[in-house]
Length: 482
Image (cartoon, rainbow, N blue to C red; front, side, top):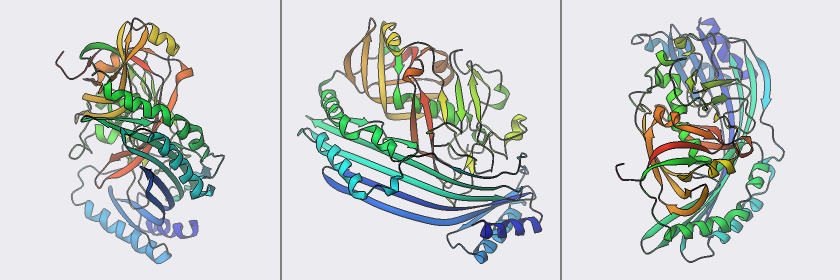
């Protein structure tokens, strides 16, 4: 593949591009779904193509094709130059790339069991077994079980001299049960909502989820929610765990610290951010307990790779340290805007046909020093919420409202009544500054986000957010004014 790729690099160097690269990508996606005892979908798709990116006279050009041969690469590279040249007419702020060493390397996601070597029959058997358990009650009107596998093989070559081959592997699965009675609808998902749990690695990840082993509990919780009392309203201490805290991190910190968004490049489509660059190193984002770390080397992380799509080596860095804003998600184009000498390596593209853009890396809340049991025991009047159901956040990533699948009242240090339709709302820095306790590393888990959308035209990216359950004081709970 590199013999083909060098054609683009040779043309770019001959035409004096400031920077150019080519990514050849072969991707296989397999997805299986069982709904109400029947196969809902079964897809196995392989794509192969390349994209060429050119920075010429401070302007970007990009072209791609699924016709992989030397002539096609030549034509796409020339087309990228034409687009870049056209952009110089309206380009008011010439782009430039932060320096990066030339890397020549091979990197592969560690795994034990190749997911594509497991038979489709075995995968469907797991889904059918789980689905049957979920449906063992007439009030369960919809039961869905999904499994998704991705392998991306990438060959990346740049005019800087980098020559990087990577094989990225991820696996995900999930199930949900919808219970209906007397006009009431309640849903329980396992292990996470919005498609289940996805991590990087092999089929061993699917096996550790134990979908069938958890199906009875999920079914009974869905049924219990039908008759559970409504979530109360008022200012209460809020304990958040699981994929709900992961989404809180994602929406109120991850997107808020993507540097292209901060600089206004996303504003016309997806909004900007309150976390502007003059706040770097000064602004109190959260309480001193709050440490949020971006890490492209994190085992199991969906944004974990050897290198990003700017050919920047994977790194680990603080976004918030001891409550203070200390970093951003950066790529090579925008790193200089905060005085950085080098990109942190947060540049990725969705497949071969999209230009790489700044994306959230794996971003995790570091664990505290209190056991989870003590966190509950020290809460007098609160509510514990898990598994996201809905979310909304404004264009500055400030005002937000989240709904969860289920909650438990916590009274005098004990988890008591199950409640349905729990919601909470807040303002990002006020919320994170109200964090007064984070569970220790024994309850720290990694949660995958497999459907993060961004860009025009839209792209999808994956990343993970690790956390232990954390407590936030006097949060607005419920739907009434309080």
